[in-house]
Image (cartoon, rainbow, N blue to C red; front, side, top):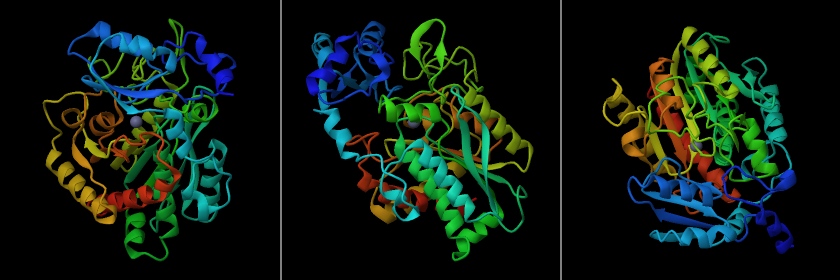
Length: 414
Ligand SMILES: [Zn+2]
C-alpha cells in the first residue's frame, strides 16, 4: 500500500503547494520534521529549503526553521550541509494519533474528537437552535470557493446589537484544528451557562459576542480531503502554479511593510498581490469595520495554534508599542495565570513582533489601529511542538477548558 501511495511523490514534489495528481490525500508516513539552522541572510539557502520542504511549520522564524520533508527530498536537504536536528521521525505516525474525523453525535461528545466542515456548520445551527431568543447564525461573506463564512452572534438582556462587540476568529490557518474546537467551546459556554452562572450572564448582558470558528473554510476542507498540513486559503494567482494567500498577512494595515510576510506565491506566508485581495479577508475587514461603526469593538481574539503564546500588537514593528500596552500586558498576564491554574499549561506573553516574529498585514494590527478595538490578542494554543498542529483528540477537552479560563479572565477584566 505504501509503495503505491509513494509513487505520487515521484512527481516533482518540490514546492509547498504542489499536490499529487487527482488531489489524492497526501500520506505523510515516512516524512520527517527537521529543525534547520539557517545562516543569517542566506536568501539562496532559504529558497532552496522552501523548494525542498512539503511545508514549513513556523514560517516567519528566520533562524531555526521547522520543515516537513518527504523521503525523496531528504538527501537533497541534507546535501545543503546545514546544522539540523530531527524533531519527528515519522509525521504520518504523529497524524495517526490525532484520531479519525468523528461522526456528529450531539453536544456530549463534540469536544472529544475532530469533525468535518459540514458537521461544524451543523453544530453551530444546533447550538443556536437551543437559544433562539438570544443568538443567531451569521454569515459575513464568502470564501474563494463560495463557502459562507459562518458564525454565531450571541447577546443578552439588552437585546441584539445593543452592546459593545467582542469578536473571536478561529481557523484562519487551515491546519490549526484545535482553534476551531476552542472557538466553538467559547460560544458553547456563553450560551449553555447563561442561565446558571451569574458571571457568564453578566458578561453576555454586557457585550454582543460574534464568534466565527472557521474563517478559512476552503483551506479547512482541503486539510481534510488532501493535505492535513495546508495553511493558506485556496486562491490561485495568474503568475504562479502555487496556490493560496495567507489571510493573516493580507489585512489592509501596514500590508506594504517588508519583512513580515512573503511576496512569493509558493511561500506559507504569501501576502497576496494587493492588500485585502483575498475574499475571506474582505469579509473580515467589512465585518470588523461594521462593528467599529456600530457599538464599537471592545475585544478581538484571533485563535491560532501552536506555541502557547498570548500576543498583542504590533506585529509589523518591534520598536514602538500600542498606547495601552501596559493594560494589554496585565490582562494577558492574568489570563495566562488563569490557564496555568487550571492545567499547569504555561503561556508566554508579549507584543507579537518582539515576542515571536514580525508579521505584516496581520489581524490584530488591523483591529487595533483601524478597527479601534480596545484590546486585540492572538492566542497560540497548545502545544509547543510535540504534536504541533495535530493535537491528539484526547487533548481537545483539556485545551478548550483551560482556554475558556483564560478568555473568561480577559472578559472579566474588560
Ligand atoms: Zn496560525
